[in-house]
Length: 142
Image (cartoon, rainbow, N blue to C red; front, top):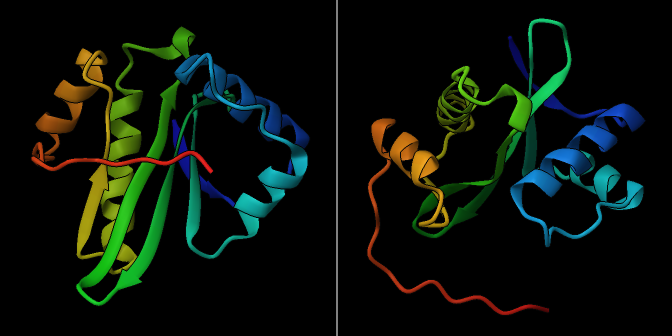
């Protein structure tokens, strides 16, 4: 298993990200090549991919990082492990890696959201030290 930040465009990786996004949510929008290239070039977005022992993409997440007057914030988005690879500890491995990665980048806070229906994911996050934060989350589709 290997986890690394993706910074160079590769059509096979675009296909893998599309597949993982589709497994994460059936309503996930279609990721275009242009949007993928934009993600890879963004200094505040860090796409981390997990590769299995045969070198195949098996999971991903994105760490977003931004400065605020209250400190440097980091956020984990789009955590996905391929269905065929679940139960191998890959989710724990990539989220643990992201925690260390955010620390390395100087983040003061690391957050994420998780659908309450994702029982295993929520248990994983709690076991890694994330605490539920009581707040209202507002969202506006633009």
